[in-house]
Image (cartoon, rainbow, N blue to C red; front, side, top):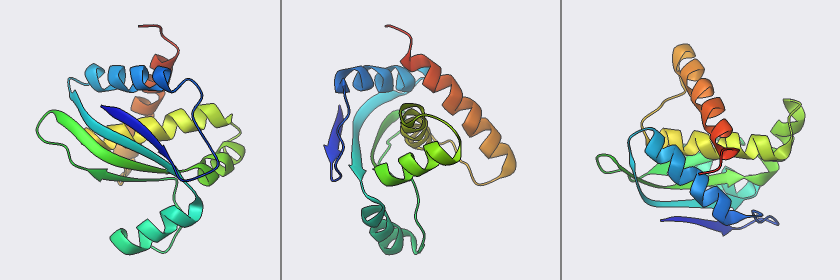
Length: 139
């Protein structure tokens, strides 16, 4: 089950379309969809989580709490709407594409993909791009 929660002045339009997309992303990597909660929040909300759980005192666009069991992925994916807006400007992209990138990024983390090393970052970016393309494909 995929659910969306809002702690920021934001709401997904066509949320069922996002649910369908995330489900297809999960299946495309041979996983089963468990409970995935996307929590859209502010920079301040994510900074508090970053400080409390990761001992980082920096802004970030996403924090993923992984509850995956075997091939059934589950987790809480916290996304800063503020960072998405800033990053879209920074990378000269539109908000919707950056949002999809970060959402896919969180789901890919639940599947075990990493992004700390140089090679891992390349693999993650390629996967993100592939998954974004899936959004525009009708099931």
